[in-house]
Length: 100
Image 1 (tube, helix red, strand yellow):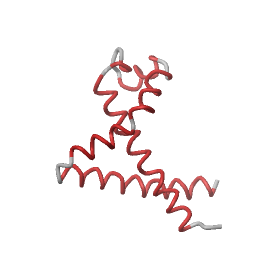
Image 2 (cartoon, rainbow, N blue to C red):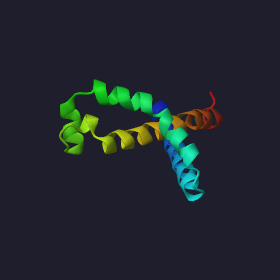
Image 3 (tube, one colour):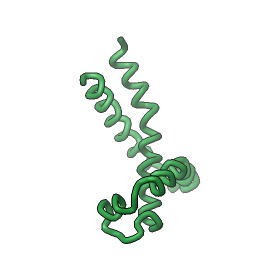
Image 4 (cartoon, rainbow, N blue to C red):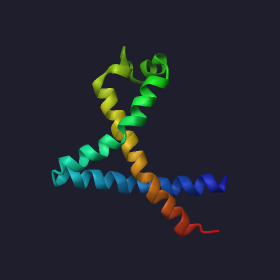
């Protein structure tokens, strides 16, 4: 249980840093870097949209045909990209602070 709690705290910190990086990229109008970031989330987002049932996406978003909706796809790609971006620093933070 402590392992999960400690890693969750490290992951939350890494997510905050990833969001700050995204805001910085938006502030300096680095659209090419943002597109690369969002592009890294496309494969997993595509998999999630087609593997999970339509009823799940409908109950989550309230949209009919949500798996094919471009706004849902784009938002999911961004969320997956940020989650992937935060994973490596979270592992580093965990190793740095909770070395066993």
